[in-house]
Amino acid sequence: MSLFRDDGIVLRTQKLGEADRIITLLTRGHGRVRAVARGVRRTKSKFGAGLEPFSHADVQFFARGSELVGRSLPLCTQTEIIAPYGNGIVIDYARYTAATAMLETAERFTENEGEPAVQQYLLLIGALRTLSRGEHEPNLILDAFLLRSLAVNGYAPSFTDCAKCGIHGPNRHFSVAAGGVVCGDCRVAGSVVPSSEAIALLSALLTGDWGHADACEARYVREGSGLVSAYLHWHLERGLRSLRYVEK
Image: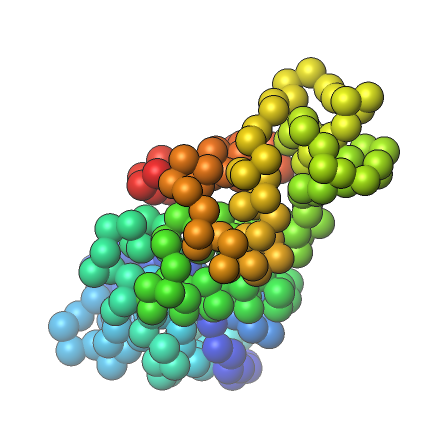
């Protein structure tokens, strides 16, 4: 038998029986963890709001030896809220839908349970914190999170140099299959020619140039979001269900 603690973001919850839930968290040290929270749906539950989606919590788990290797689920025995990001998210539809897409993205990129994914974890915390405070437009925060998630998982798009031959940009064509912008000689079927403003916006979001991103016109934000969605869909091999609800 074993007790272990970790802090994590609650990605989603599923009903189990009459009063329990299965909680999926992205944790700092153990990657994605699924655990059972007994009695959490009762009004007098000791867990309170600590195990709701968007919450950043410190959780203690109890597992038998077989549960540590995935044969069954550990139990959540204690929880303490570190940051209730949901309080600043659920009050606004645009924030809520953007945050939901972030949680789904983080879960999709961490499909191997128990495998540490510290960079993805830190990206998610930073994005939810920024979103809950309303520091930037929700669409911009979401696109920045998606681009950086792709980058830390080995799918960083190129927005300046040709993704195939490396020739210095700017390059006009964009191909999701090729990995970003490509030159005229490397252009492949299905390439598009986005505006230079949209490409510059995506580059700014990837590198954290919020001054440029916040000043960008809405039409280029929409165009950039379309490119991010297509690029993400290609590399995940299927789209995110939650993206259809995000306001554009």
